[in-house]
Length: 298
Image (cartoon, rainbow, N blue to C red; front, top):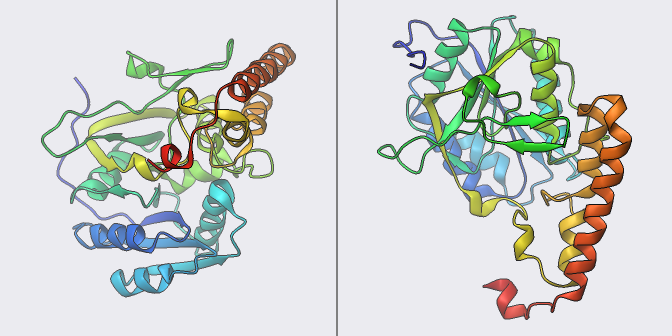
């Protein structure tokens, strides 16, 4: 049986790191969800990376306890999160303060932050990832990941005890844990894969990585980047899938993950294998017929 989460008996300071870029409606909706959270100790750290649509102004108008960091559009995910963590550090947080890293394209149930903060208070040596649900009535979807450094594969484990990576799409941990893990590495992993490397680093430092069905959110997967390699046609789309920072198939990111996450003795083989597989994919995409503009937009 999973641990239960009791009714919150305290209100820890929660530093919510939220990197955003030009999604004013989406981010404002997230801020509205924050106002429905009964937990009173929330400090929103909005990392607005060069938005031109008034995102920061709308969020500040919707949620009072907002700290704004402004970028020029070059942060991407890892640097955005790190900028937020650096701001928290400058505000002298307590070691037991809770840090929540999240995307704006999610919906939060009203007890999300209270349940997550309570779980971390009870399990301070833990990183807690949010599970996914389509609605309050649906079953939770496991989001924990098992990384196999022998073949560079990422799977959803049947046994939650095998979780050794987590997404930052709703990640709770203490400030003490943040300090122990160390900074993100945007020079190597600017976007995709940065959260998996960071949480895997936590696992290797002895932290417990978990999810819990009482701590869940509803993601809007339609707003994320390229994801399905079977839906790539033509050399242009193949190139974007392999080299766009918004793509989960980004080859430099995958090579960076191998470099940072795989033991030295296995790195050369996996680096060569991953490169050859990516080149094979690019050739296959190049030989397929490009889709018409109407098909791409539909």
